[in-house]
Length: 378
Image 1 (tube, rainbow, N blue to C red):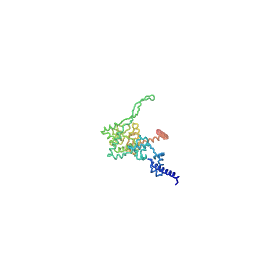
Image 2 (cartoon, one colour; image 1 turned 90 degrees about the vertical axis):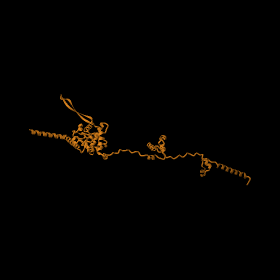
Image 3 (tube, helix red, strand yellow; image 1 turned 90 degrees about the horizontal axis):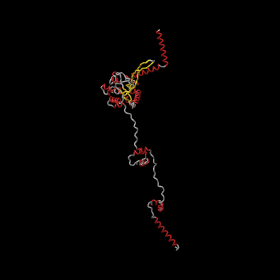
């Protein structure tokens, strides 16, 4: 080796030593927050990883959340009611929104919460009560139950009626220059309370009012009346009983359209007396005022006419004595309603006879008859 190469070789060795020393020093540099094992697995020098840790890492990844469903107010109320008393449910006043309430439920979705709620109570429809026949069958003493029911209808009904009062007065009139005195009849309608009449008759007979009014009616008729009143009550007509049995004395106290004292089907002596009463007076107790009760009574009477066959009781006199009812198979009903049909037929015949052609025929027959009488007289 020549002398000229020694300086170059020395310089090269110095550089190699310096490089080795520098590499050994840098290898000791570490950042406390960087995992060197993970970096070495990627084959990246430690020096490059350390310097790259100071770069901007970019926006942090956001947590993935499901879209929030907004529930209506009634849903919120249902959730609050279902979880009332639960410590995990925040107060609405604190969170300030329905979304916060629903979000605080965690994994429970609103549909799941609602499904866990108890169903709302269904509308309670009024179920029909037992029929009058079922009630009677359940009664250990049917006759006693019938009497009690009829008595309750009698006791709870006002005994008020409108009576027609006639008054005859004398008046002076002038006709054709002459003065004449005539008698004029005035008719007035007066509201009367007749509630004192039955008690007076019961006291005279030495009976309680209940035994007199209810006990004096025919047993079979009371049973029919019991079922008929139940049917009227079910129809919403609120039937009331104002009169039951009447003896001769009680019938004598009656006013208006009435039979003779001993001939009343309410229980006159000619009809059998006590225990054989086959009539009652019915009105409607529905309404706050007398005018309303009169209106409902008229509806009640027409309803009886439309259902008399199924009820077994009817109005023998129709509107001539509206409250009066009796058994449709009884003598009074058959006779009075039969006469009513005959009267209707007679009225229809009279109307036919008043037609113009009939009037002419009747006048012609009258002339012929008059001529025949005149010829016979001569």
